[in-house]
Amino acid sequence: MIIIIIALGIGIFISKTDFSPSDPLIEEAEKHIGIAHREGGAFPEQGFDSSGFVQYVFNEVLGFMLPRTLDQQMEQGKEVNREDIEEGDVLFFSKDGGSVSHSAIYMGDDRLIHPTVSKGVEVTHFNDNSYWSGNFIEARRISEPPDIAEDNDIVAVAQQYLDVPYEFGGETPNGFDCSGFVQYVFDEVSDIYLPRTTDQQWQAGEEVNIEDIQPGDVLFYSDTYREGISHNGIYIGGGQFIHASRTQEVTTSYVSEEYWQEKFTGVKRFNQLKVSSDDPVVSEAARYIGEVPYQSGGTTRAGFDTAGFIQYVFREAEGIQLPRTADEQWEKGAHIDKEDLQPGDLVFLEATHLNPAIYVGNHQVVHVTPDDGVTVTNIEASNYWGPKFFGAKRVEK
Image 1 (spheres, rainbow, N blue to C red):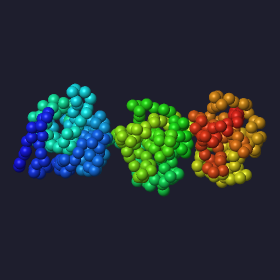
Image 2 (cartoon, rainbow, N blue to C red; image 1 turned 180 degrees about the horizontal axis):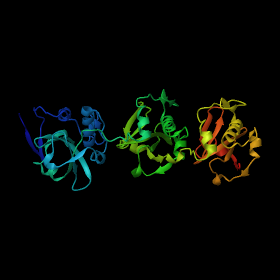
Image 3 (cartoon, one colour; image 1 turned 180 degrees about the vertical axis):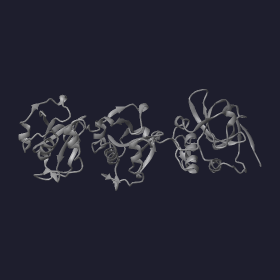
Image 4 (cartoon, rainbow, N blue to C red; image 1 turned 90 degrees about the vertical axis):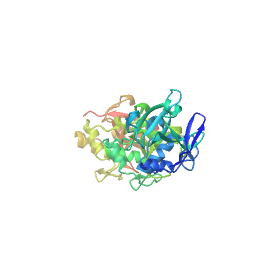
């Protein structure tokens, strides 16, 4: 074995050798010796920074993606004592005692392989190099992908649709766009009925600080293919989210990727939007969401018109016989201010005609529309129905 040692700057650098590495991570890493350093680079054709290099090598060999940032990579796997470091372990370094600023893959025999600013991907000494030895923070042994919260119902169901093709306007497993995917998963798993578009979904949820994010929360992004809130995805743990990507399909990405960092808007949690079953009127109305179509003159489960649905639900749930038309229903009960609404109250929305609806909590109503049949609308988030609030009534039960 021939080793050429060159004294250069802060330490000793080793050229590419003719050894045969026993670890496939090392074998893959060696293929890229000489590729230039590039801040933000994560592929051979663009160059590498240190975390991009580690991410690329692990994905090529082990078939899973590590997070993109050094901080998150340093949370993966298990910590290894310095004296127990082995081939394929990832070593992390600081600069002058600060936060983590660099990573490298250990090759054995006191060698590191990593991209440096001056030389690109190269091999250097570790313990025999005062700079790398002195700035070492810790080592991690990473053999498994980042933990995904597969025990979370939202996450588990969302993952079933990986690789479903992207379709603008799509909201079924035949094809999804981003908000259609989020809406479909929450409806299927939790009976949480979200608005249809990203900006409306953003209006509906409870805002959560990024440091408090939990699996099942939804991340929102702005100014992607259009101005304003234009993309979202479901956080699945391990620093990743699942989303319907316009350039791919339903896929996973790291929150830490530079593109998503630049477009990040915020996180919303939708747990509180689940339709309660405590009120019998609400519980009865919720049975028909997405199940019964609009039918002109309809008053049965074969199909409802707007007022026919209200009449049917109150009769089935409480034995209350309301009038047949929306105008007549408006004359019943006591007036309620919008801020005093309770589940089971009647809400009237005025479009071409009065559209009666049943309030189910959290700014949501169940009602019938010609396009969607029995559906849920968030009247705070809906650009169409929100401004059409006419009034509310409480019918004694």
